[in-house]
Image 1 (cartoon, helix red, strand yellow):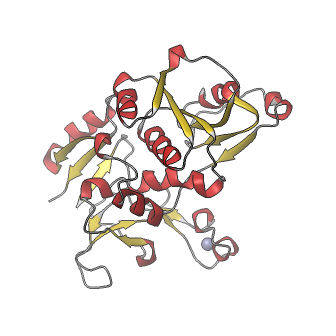
Image 2 (cartoon, rainbow, N blue to C red; image 1 turned 180 degrees about the horizontal axis):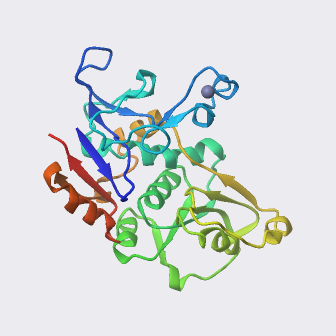
Length: 272
Ligand SMILES: [Zn+2]
């Protein structure tokens, strides 16, 4: 088993080997994190990710990857293709989250600014560029911006950013209360702001510009695992540079320390 976390609150098990008998016995799988009831009105509409009875692996009333054992409904599991390494497969969930944007919006060559050069910002930028958008990423950390530039995507240091309201689409991956106000300074009238990260702190801001400029604000969360697996398998998104380190289980505390570093993107734990 290979578990991963980039934050101290932990991440989910992205990939594991199923040990007993059954449909996926002995094979590598990834698990959709939203475990829905599949009997309510929203589930009937195909909105399982919004099921009010859902548990969410590692987040809401459901153990996460660092539990001794983890039960996941079989319908949540997808087989990892043999051609995909475990190190690639652990990125299925964040790649799927990035793939949620093209599910929600018709993409046709829009200009896009992604705010935040972390793991999700990087993956959103790659997915949107793959869908033909003209993408640039705004970030703070030199190392993270360099990884994005190496993927052929334009980058800008936050302190050199010019506030120009000319971008069709602004994707906030900052996880910070400063993300949305900054996005409003960049999006063009009648453009769209996609909020990809949840912000824990409460936020107050002037909403008048949203009305005056007729800006659409779109919340965006979990996405399709099957699409993400396909993109990973076809090499349409490159996750190798996002793997910061891997540690054996006995060095778990060092792994957590590493994951706290500003330059860390994804730290893996090997559970033998
Ligand atoms: Zn339901």
